[in-house]
Image 1 (cartoon, rainbow, N blue to C red):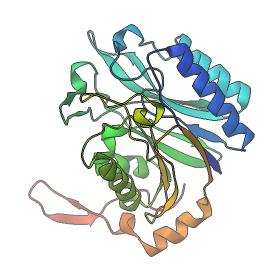
Image 2: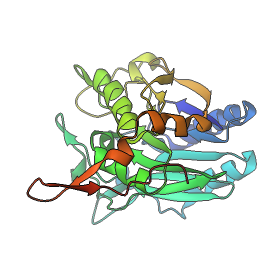
Image 3: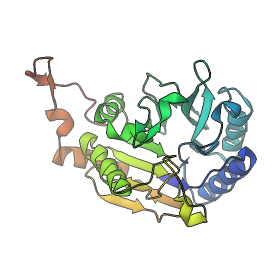
Length: 281
């Protein structure tokens, strides 16, 4: 299955951002991709009044993305904002396309490195997956990548490909952390990880300032054994990769971490191996 990563710089202008989605999704489909993954905050970049742009999943923005995905015959995954509690929003991923409709609200909010996402965002509490051509994909967003249990949960639900869409905050060592974390999550779960970050705005002539997370690039596709199948430069790019899904069983035979995993009780005692969805659905 061919998967495309569209590493873009979204801005405050929703129409301009939609045209970026259209252009990259069109190129991805022309290259034979079945899925194209866009970053977190594709709808509107962080650092803008998110409550002013937030729309429900049956609103105009999401409907335009659905129509585009249906027109092109490709599944798109992208970050948008939906209404949250009070004057906050939800940081939502929408996966839509032929036979696919799923959404995920970011569970782990980025209250770190001087940024407080929870001030403006309501956290989600449910994992999300979708299935395409017999392959199950898990959904996650940015700061979620620091929490292995989320990836174990999507894998237990059948995911063999885990998608993480990000608008990663820049700073000393942050790009290296991103690289290490996406590889670790692949190794934790012996799944493919599709990691799509916003492009580094400096590569587009818009250097970031302050703690607002706007992206560092470094999108990647990681194999179940932690190998980098593909990686991107820091600037805007479209990368298409043909995933060798048949290699998954071999990887899990070599590295049976899911079969060997053990549960621990509140006192730290190890019990029987966990039911973790070892093997393909």
